[in-house]
Structure formats: structure tokens, C-alpha cells
Length: 381
Image 1 (tube, rainbow, N blue to C red):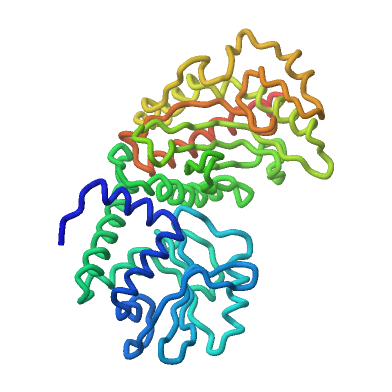
Image 2: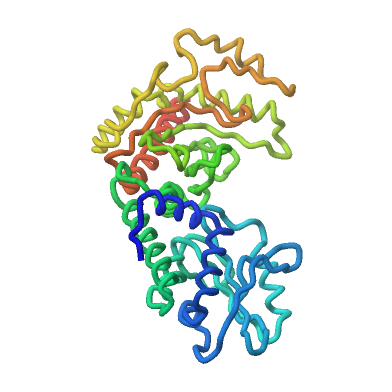
């Protein structure tokens, strides 16, 4: 068989990062040789199996259903998760479908990491590597070759996600990094502030992987609608830059007793209170004081210390008066904002020589820096 080129591996990476095409790859392998299905999913190895794709189940579609060829009955259901996340009550709806089948098929939730998705205990978790690796020993040469290429690629992503991020070549690595980072930060931030604090992996409006970490503002530690946080955004998957962006922020949510204009006004007041702590200069210095020298040196800004405008020229009163219920919002403020309820500075982070563990230290430290500033101001009032 021919050896792989870097270009072919990049194309294969884009397929594995998408649950539909990853499911298609699994289907292709099973069509070439169905016997490894029994090893991959713990099915009786004396039986033969076939795969169906996009099987209707209630108001959704199952990624993969494995049928026993002799009986025609479904023996296993596989939900493949690449760069996407679970949606709503997806697993519960599919479980209901499976419970109506006799005998009940086994249920598998497959992602890059075994602990990536929270799931119903009826679903067995497995990894992409565990699913594809049995075909390496296939007697079908094409199946064996393809499975080996997939596993080599998955292993390279795993190594890149846990090393210095400047060596990243894998298409899916930012997703792995942000999801692993979110799990680490979530455990640590809840230990620091209690269970009202959180960290989670998302994707921004452009589809780039990101993490958001937050803790309730010290004005009311039980109110998780008013938070101090950080979001860290990777570049697009196809980008070769090592520049990520970190956004220290204040966010205020609307509630039954807090209108949009009130949320925007409170967000601005709280952000303005600690604006000096949110700038690049202060955060860089504070990280260095905490011994995070590499993290401090990785930060940079183009201008205005990370703010949208020069703080010394900012007209506080005029901007504050422009916050109202109308669709328009005073975009000339000193902060960057999302709908006026999340006010932030933006700082570049060159991750070339940083690991995800060092990014976790950075994210947690910045939340603590802002939180300490807010506590000091409250104590002084």
C-alpha cells in the first residue's frame, strides 16, 4: 500500500472531525470487512453484521445502526461525536427508540476522549481510536491500511493536544485542546469558588473552538447571572497562526426582574469599576508576580492596552447615557462587547510555547485577578 502524504492526512482529519463523515468512514470499513465490528463493539463474533446510516428515530436520526445480517435486528447504535457536541435531549430520545426494539440494542457514545461528553448511563462511552483500531488487523488490505492511517492520525492529535501548541498540525486539535482545557478548568474553578463557577467548551460565531470560564461576581456569590470571566478563542482550524485571543470580561444576564437596559447598565458599571485590572499591562504584570512567566510573555496587544479605545479619552457619562432599551447600542465604548451584556478587553496570546495546562493556569489566574480587584473595591465601599 502507498504511504500517506501530509495532504492526505489533512483531508482525512477533516473527515474525522465531522460526525457524518466519521460515520461514513466506519461504514466503509465495515463494507470492506464486517468482522472487526464484533471486536469494536463487543458483539458475538460468530455473527455477521451490516451498517445502516442516518436511521430515523423519533424526530432525529441515529448516526450508525449495526444490524445482525441473519436476524435483521439492530444489535448496536453508535452516536459519533467529532467537533460537534450533543444537542438537547438527543441521547434520551434515542434511548426511547432503542427501548422499543426487542431485544434492546447496545448503545455507544463515541468521541475523541472517553470523558468528553456527559451521558445517560445507558450509553457506553468509547473513543474514536477504540472504534477504528480493530480494522488494523483486518485481512482486507485496504481496510487495514485505512484503519492504520486513522489511528496514526488520532494518536498524533492526542500528542499535539498535550504538548506545546505551536507544533499543532492536526485539523481537530483546537477542539481537543479546548474540551480538555474546559474539563480541567471546570474542576479547578469549582474547587476555588464553589459550584456556581463553571468552565465549558464552545465554538464562536465563526465556528472556532473556544473555552469560557466564569465565577459569580463577589457582590453576590450565589447570583450566577452576574459573573466575572474569561473566554479564550482559538483561530480557525485551517489557520496556521499560533495567536489565540483571551477576553477578560464582566457579563450580566437578563432576568425576570432585570431588563436588558438594566443588565447593560450594570455590566458597564461593574466593568468600569475594575477596568484597570482588565487591561493587558496589569494582567501581564500580575501573571508574572504569580510566577507564570511564560504566560505573561505570551501576551500582547496591538493598541489601547487591550481596550477598544484609549481609556484616558473615554467619555464615561456620554456612553452610560446611551444605554437604553432600543435596538441600537453605543458601540463607541471603551470595552468590546457582546450585545452589551458582556464587556471585555481583548488580548492576544501566542500559544507557540504553551501547553494546555499552562493555558489553564493562565485562565484561572486571570479570573482570580479580576475577582480580587472586585473584592477590594467592594471592601473599600
